[in-house]
Length: 172
Image 1 (cartoon, rainbow, N blue to C red):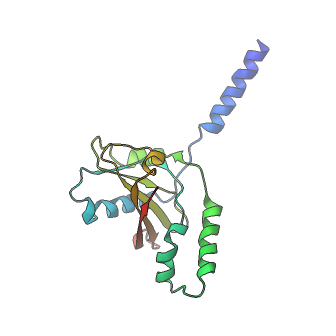
Image 2 (cartoon, one colour):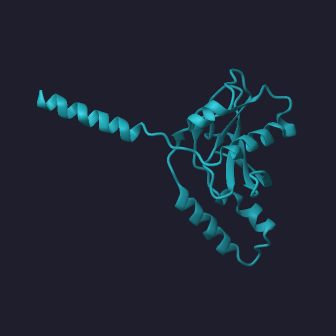
Image 3 (spheres, one colour):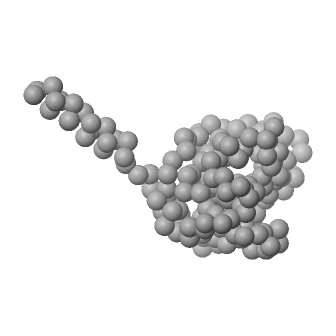
């Protein structure tokens, strides 16, 4: 009886630790990014864009070349790379479920594209979009031998999109 009680207490404690939701910052960033992507010409003729409710980590260093050009980092190439790499290492996290995303975006049963959000970092957000005509919504499966477009959004003090960078990614 005592052993069952201890097991029950441990299971309840584990459920409390594991079952805690991670709250997202700046929900408006996610909504604004979704609207921006949905309005891009390449998505006008698609059957819609689904938003995954799994928040994933996406490297900032992917945008090295774009940010170097934008900020005229010609001679400080290594400094920029180390800066972006340090951001990636500082904010790295495991994928997690976000009920806010699930509730914010409609469930689209037939979609041609799916996007994955990363977490907000300071005034920025990274979003990755895959073509998913086979209705796949598993990030690891989608990122195997496929292509995607990754967007980096910067926001102003009024939480409006200030600047957007995008890169095409080929996974082999």
